[in-house]
Length: 292
Image (spheres, one colour):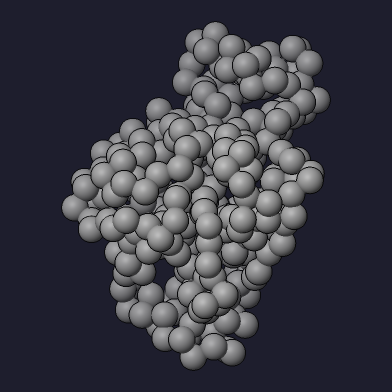
């Protein structure tokens, strides 16, 4: 069974999507539609901008979403997913690719999410750190004991958890995690504490937009980040998408559930190949490939 997976923030690169734009008329029309919906030429930043341009959350998120979704649409009949999932932002790409959301509605929500997250980051200096080679439970225990805001944000694969919180909270947790035997606790170059309680202001703003959007039943199950389980009910999908902003991304559990449900081939659609690497770390026996 084929599982299509969609990357999140961090996968962007200058020139992303340009081949699609240049060589596919349908893709070009969708990119131009996106420029119209967003009110600025995001294609200029994707194809010829600087790395700093692409690092801005309000640009990064719609750029990755567009690359992933337009790639899925350009596959035509070849795109026949048995199941889909996306990492953080990638969940929106997965929902549009699976027909739960229209292209325009998905893009508007992603843009709203990006702006809301950027505002939350600017309001409260915060950060994230990757923790290697400690059990999930130990990371949870140490974060819970720190006297500041810090929590697991991404369960990426066994032995790799990203934590998120205030700068002091993350610093204190990293010190204790190393003392507890973590191989590394490396601070990431990110704008703020994604998937943590510090995203609450963005959560409230996005909840309203998601609540007002029209969701349909997807063509296949969507394995969502908040619980690692398959969903097809539009109301459940909406509720999980709202929770996703302040809850951890349970990617390990998503992939394990997809494999348990029959997935033996994972295809990553969008920039980069991070998800292929994570899938292999979760189960090296499954086949992985990607399209950019």
